[in-house]
Length: 171
Ligand SMILES: [Zn+2]
Ligand SMILES: [Zn+2]
Picture 1 (cartoon, rainbow, N blue to C red):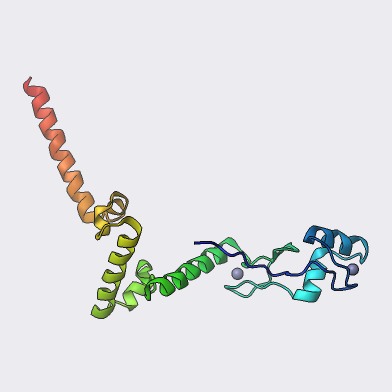
Picture 2: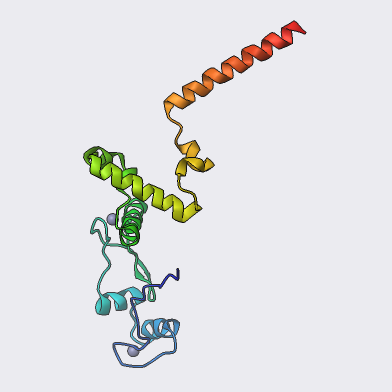
């Protein structure tokens, strides 16, 4: 999958005097030297200010080519990228990946949704690993450690220790 970069500023010509440049670097120094304004002021004047996609707060200016930052903070960025991932998931599988969020799971624990989630989880595993069950994959096995299995493991380890100790004292 090729990632197409969103270009906000498409032309390299000065919107104030119409002079064209081969690149944005040339334009940036032109507006600074000839028009005595910063790239930010220029961008703001012709392309508008940037606002956080998540909370709507004003964002910082990045550069003439990038424009303003999409998000105002790291927390908004993580929300925004999670949302984006959900959208991609929706486009790809026709389901959103909501089951990972505890608050959503609680609201959506209807039998139909659980069934749908099982299908989508299976599908994701198939696509990603070529196996049908995520539980067969070591990394997800680790994540699946419930307190119950942890307790069982602790008990098993205690027994092993006892046996080892018994063996040790016998010989
Ligand atoms: Zn100019
Ligand atoms: Zn924000």
